[in-house]
Image 1: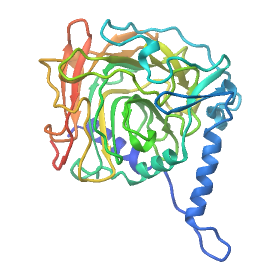
Image 2: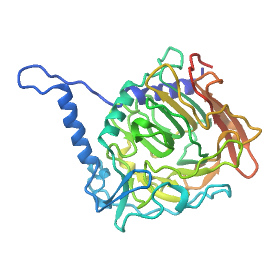
Image 3: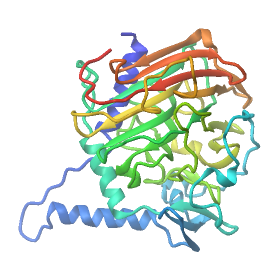
Image 4: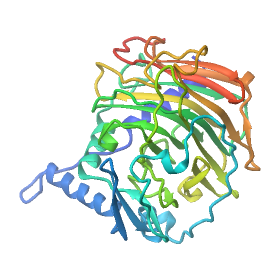
Length: 402
C-alpha cells in the first residue's frame, strides 16, 4: 500500500476517534453526576448554536429554519473571528452542464414559498436529540486499526489527481442525487475532501451530500460541510455544530434536503457543488453557482492552498455488523450512467480561481472494502460531462478488505 493511501486511511480514522473528549471526574459529596454534567453542556451548546431568530420558518417536511441576524450567527462565537468583517460574495466561476439539475427554486424541499428577510441568514435549528446523537455517533463509530483490515466502522472509495508539489485552491463536481436505505446508526456520503498539512496537523474542508440520521434526524439526502485545522483532534465539526462556517445565503443552508432524486435506469438528477479560495482569503461553498457561505482563512493554520483533493464516497456505522449503501446502492459501472452513482465535471481551482479539469492520466483510485460492497470506476473524459467517475455499492457485511 502506498504512503499516500496509508496517510489517507489514518486521516479518516482520526475523524471518528478524536472529535470529542468525554472524560470527567465526579468524586466527593456535592459533585454532580456525569449525566448531569453532560446535560448542562448540551444545553449550553444548544444556546450557542440556536441564536434568537428574527423569523422562524417551518418547512413542509418539518425542518425548522431560523432567520438569524447575519452578524449574530454562531460563527462569530469563535474567538478567531472576533473582529471579522462579512466578505463580499464572489462571482460564480464554474459553468454548469445542461443535465437535469432543476431550477434553484425547486432544488430544495420545503423552502420554495418562503425565505429569510434581508439582513438575515438561514440556519437549520439543531435539536437536543440531534446534538446528543451526533456526539454518540462520532464517539461510538469504530475506526479502522492502523495494522488491521478496513472493516471496523467505515469504508471509503476515492479518486485523486496525484501530481507532486501541485497546489489546489478549490475543487468541485456535479454529484448524482439518490435516495438510500440508511439505518439510525449509519451514515453515507458523496464527498469531496480538500486537505493540506503533515500527519497530525492536517487542515481540511469536506463537503457534499449526506444521509445521516444521527446528525439530521432522518435518512434524507442533505447538504453537509466539515472543517478541521488539526486532523480532527481538538477542532472542527460538521455543518455549524461549532463556530466556524460563516453563513451568507438567506435560503440555502447546511441540512437542506433535495427535492429531486434519481430513479434507477432513468435520466439522473445531479447537483453542482464546489469550494474555492476567493480573493486569496476565504474558502467559499457554492451550490448551483449560489454562494452559501465560507470557511474563513483564519480558522485554519495551514490552508493557504491544498496539497490533496479527493472525490468519492464514505460509509460508516457504529456497529460492525452491516454497512450502509453508498452512491445509489448499486455496484458502479461505466456502460449506463442511468444505473450508477457518479461525479462529473471533476475539477480543481488554480491560484487565479480558474476551474480546470483534473488530469485523467494522473488520477489514482482507492477503496477500503471488498468491491462486492463498494467500488469505484474512473471513466476519464465522458462526452460533454467532463472528467467523470462512477462509485458506490450495496454495503452489507463488508467483512474483508479488497
